[in-house]
Image (cartoon, helix red, strand yellow):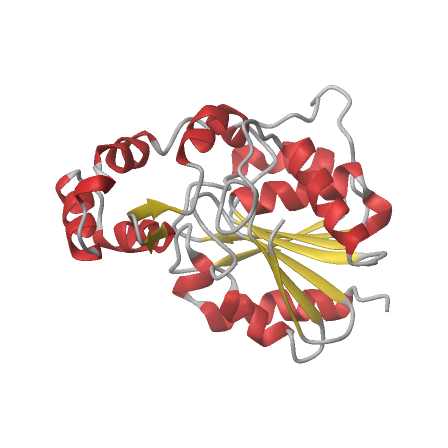
Length: 258
């Protein structure tokens, strides 16, 4: 996995969500790097990381551990938003001895219904060979029914070369693996458990983490703490970054064993 490392101290790995990249949690990284080594990753099929034909949470969790091994990091705190939160949870469940704490932002360890059909359709509708500038790509996304905030976020994946525009992300791979990414793998009858420190932060106006998910969360993360940031939706870390960053920083400091 491609990564950016800043700061010194105990390690915190920041993992972005679907269609994102290592810049998504950059503001949090700047806050944490004062006291910690912060590693912001590009998840496979995103940013500058390798394109995979298939991906699921066990293999993504393994990729996190392989990165830690490569960097000689014995343990780390993991912070992930949305899909990144599921990757962090999977790493904690499968490699608990390597994870000091896990923080999941607005996501639960459950399977979800499809939420991105319109986004995939809009991205597919863009004829990159005909795009001459970002404004044209933005216009096409807006015309496809994507709101401007989401469209601007998606266009962070657009890069330009001598041959024209192209997506940094592996759009074909993401579509192929989408069922795995909205799904979950832990057997509810006999689930893996992470008994270390865990924190779930939800947006007060988001429906990604609800009371219906409480049992599944407790079954897999029995020592979980929970926080709600009122006045935020799924993008809670961007909507109220100061509050989000403080909650994350305080939790990591409390559970830092280094």
